[in-house]
Image (cartoon, rainbow, N blue to C red; front, side):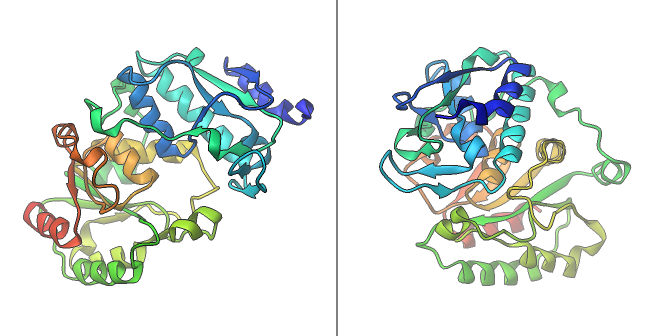
Length: 319
């Protein structure tokens, strides 16, 4: 174990008052590190469903690598691990500062001898079925980012957000879904709201995107211009994955929070952020026996659909 190679990361941890430990053989389970995974782990902490502290693997932010277990080959997860590390430190700092439920001592970073995150030692239990609230409880000041004048003027009227990411899994034919949405958006006239488009226009080829066949519905969403061109604000970026910017993400979260509805197709960080920071209407046919059977999802202001036809019929009724 070359602890010196972690110096930059350790310096940042110390500057931000986070602790780290060395767990050479990784006997401690660490949390999953997707943005949505972290957010839902925070909700679990908020409701006392998991014990404190939680442990965060630091190896992956040093090397960008993961392994299925101690004996497997290493693979690249983060092409830009430092960028992903800084983003998550900023996210934790901001939420901790604006919550009564978390303290920095609740999060401990872990260095092992593997120089890679071990999936076999990663805890992906989120207690979806027993959550009481699908919202993070934060001070109102958390949402006080300064938005530019164009956006401020645009959101003076009630608005909805369409998110561009489409993530299901290999069981689904993405082309059929995209064709369905292309037809739906081509004829959709929105009467009550302004429209903001958020997310990436394209999804970079990565191990994760190849495994889940992640793509976007940005080309399909552009068909909304057919009947709504005077009330659309396109805030998408060409790429976001591995080019994370916390200030930009925070601006997006403020819009997610202020929106009358967030519209999401599929899973992923955009859905988790929308659920926990705003009100969400979403299509997701996967894992229907997990948190979707918890009525507190609906009591938190969200609406969930297992079929494209049903979510689109619902949208026709409310927009």
